[in-house]
Length: 293
Image 1: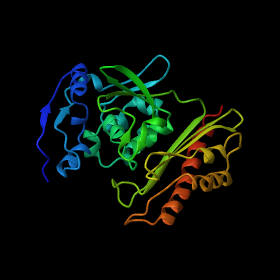
Image 2: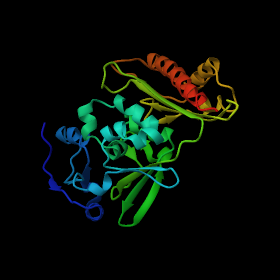
Image 3: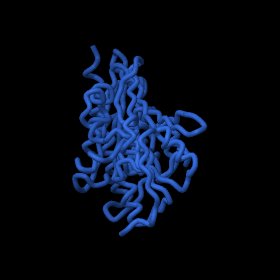
Image 4: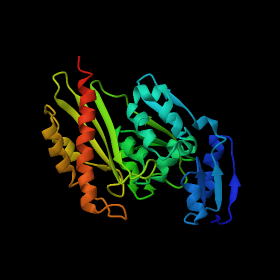
């Protein structure tokens, strides 16, 4: 397992990266943590003519909170930092809580938030979390910068709305509304394996305990993160209860499209989805209720 021949560049500035990408486009690949790209190159599933190493571009590694409470995370921020950074834990706890589900610590020490999002694996956790939190992605090219909503970014298996000449530089997470609870649950046969299926839930309540916002996003249940809008609508303006969680789980079943594999049949995956949905909604609602004064 050896990659096809390629040229290698390691620029130390974002401006240099953007310039190189503008000149090479489809012929180049960006190397972040390398946890997905390098294996694909070794199997010759991907054969770039030019590999651009981002690991010297320190300006892409940061976690900050702006004056509006929006969380800004540089594309080269390691997944391990997402797991341990106090600013992320405070402002986007769903991210911190989800990260231990991602592979193993050795992988998270190298893998980056940007690499996972650009790779767009439907079995990956970070794309699902970005959609659940209504995040945005900032990309740059010689033509300028543009924001991409997470809900429109992921367009298919390993496919995004990011153009070949564009570089992902940052993700932005809006501030969490008051009385918001969250949860992420998944099922994997072994610790660190890809999950058979998973779900992220975000719930916001009003002061009386009625649901005013709900979002359910599924992992490995289709070619992209699957948003179960009709299932979330079941909860709106309601006092939440286990019966409602079960109803939402049944409605969500129509939104997902799991694929049978050597580990599980479609009926089993749908059963898992219903069970995990109830668990996620219960935990998210409990956390939201704890914030009502």
